[in-house]
Image 1 (cartoon, rainbow over the protein chains, first blue to last red):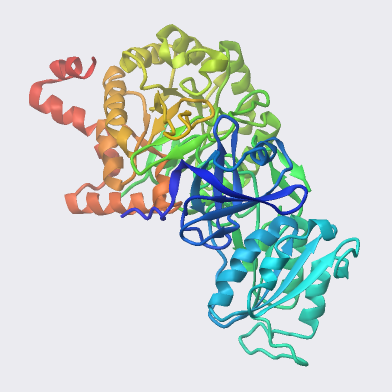
Image 2 (image 1 turned 90 degrees about the vertical axis):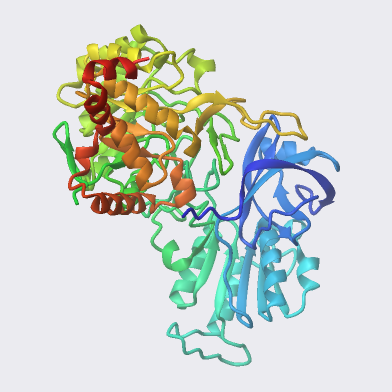
Length: 286
Length: 324
């Protein structure tokens, strides 16, 4: 009668097995266990005595779990101070994951540390015979993540952009995506037509800052290409009870009906790209 | 088969309402619960001023239990005006505004701030087990304190019915209910969470909740909720409506707590297990059971256990046996 998804709602502590310093502020931790996460899902990461927050799963191969994080606030700074062997609580996996069909041609748009979960998606989709156009964007060369890992995968064309032009295209990854969509149309009615040498694009996945997601949402709606976006809101329970992450005016919970939301629903979220709520439910503009 | 009832002048299309604290922060959330079949909505507790909750972890669970120490965060009356105001524009189902405060006077002031929004009922949370460090023992743990809070709210509440939300963590919930009834309570919500309880992580040897302890909910507390509803119903002679809540997951659970004396039934933790459609599912299960058993109106079941006991052992002894 009950439909409890396969997830742990009680944290269990795992040891940090490996630490990789990705950039000055970004680290990847490998934990000695798997939660069985799918690409796009998140977990709640608990530092005993400090705090617990949602983090995207950067990788889960059934034996190990990876989390890539940016040391930006008190919790992630405390996390950054951890060493190999330290205990960290994990519960989950929570939420929706990216969905694809074998053999699809998919554009992945990754902004900032959104590159980590996008690598997880890439690794799984190429395994299913998909071909990928991966648009990785960051402020500058020093902030680009997962380029080597993405390049090591087959059937992946990498498109790098930086705001300051220190590597790749100077500008935003969404501008590069638009250039590609111009030569690679989708009729939106099942019949696809490709122009020039580019195969038709089946769908677009995006993970990154909200304003980037908003741009991807508008762009893919305009080109009538299905897209799936990873949205983020303040979370407490992670499994649809507390109501902290519901969005106006749909009332859907980004921990359960998200974080990966199809653009058909994203365009109906009025607060998308405008405001978000804090732990008290108070609105803050982007 | 009819699930509809009118409680203190307010029509409910079905008895299954969203309990306070769950999915209760925004109007969009309340409307979605109504769309999924909730017969009424209870807001998360509203404060007179902005109130910070506890740090995470605040909510954890297993298949057996849920522990929470969210700590009643709220942005204050301005947000309440915006969200309740938006909900009341379409008013798809009755709205129960849950209020909380740290003192008797503040309960009255909070009620005064919320009443202009015209909620159908006020529910007074005097029983939160998660803010003890801040405010001491809940009002619901002492008959005089519970009565004082009730009286203060009743003084300003006018025609809006006032439900007092009681704690199961007391020697005699019947005595507390009687004191509140004498102070003018129009109804009760029974129960708030049980405990508090604690969960410890083995490897780190640390309590998991940031608040260390939290209120217990989920299927396992249903027998306590049923007993408390039965006690409150008996103590008040079945004259005051009760919103029965605590561990209710299925239509049969809902019918059981109605037999104990609940007119309305609150759903909280079950949303995590059965999804948002739990409201529709429970209503369908109640319909099916009632149809099979030849019950025409679900309201006929309210307090049914007490009538059954009375018919077997006589009303006087029954009352005595129910009040412990």
